[in-house]
Image (cartoon, rainbow, N blue to C red; front, top):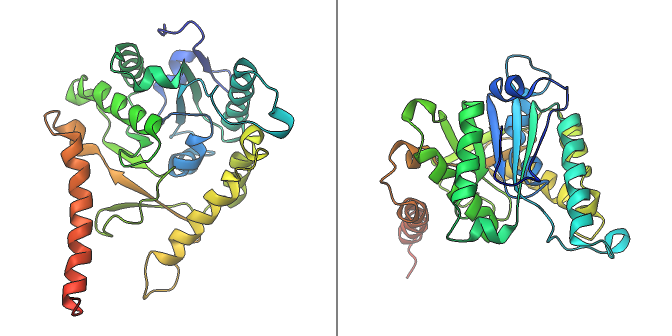
Length: 284
């Protein structure tokens, strides 16, 4: 396949031909940066791990060159950091037994910019080549602008596809903002109790991020455990790890639906829920 960036790369851990590796994909994650996939799409990774009837493919949209760096990486140039982060992501693809790992290699600013046709075209081509049943991406209420931009570019790409080529589900996942504020009936809940060792190993591969003072590995596993405990107030824990997602499928089923209105409606329903409880308990 041809991509807009000559530095884009398709990595296939088991050496299968590119067309086959992409076509066998059933679960696809489209993320902004190296390590976002392992934070937000554990459900897809676990569902496909050691299976031969399900295959997980990851897509990293940006080049990862702008990340903070200290210690061992303090003097690394943007180019050196980009190479390190790509290698770390490849290691994760090997350990997680991904079908394929794609690097589109866009600067973050290009993904956020208004002239983003190349990004949308590449994402459309990825989906056409993989035809996944499920896609995981960032949720549009995330507080990281590049994460939100990636989700918006992906939605735009999916809307340009004929209905039969769109995934069955599009999920907006947690990275830089938890989704525990969603009403329980609106949460997409993923049980990620299995293979905690694998999850920890995948998160631990991104040394360039962890050694700089941001322990995403501990925070992510802790969040999964916290979700499992705090999800139901009157029941014993049914899982040791949960992740939450926002169901974004209506946005691709109806391309005329306003993304802003769709997301803000979740927030309004949350506000209404809080208001009703306060009123019922006599708040003034």
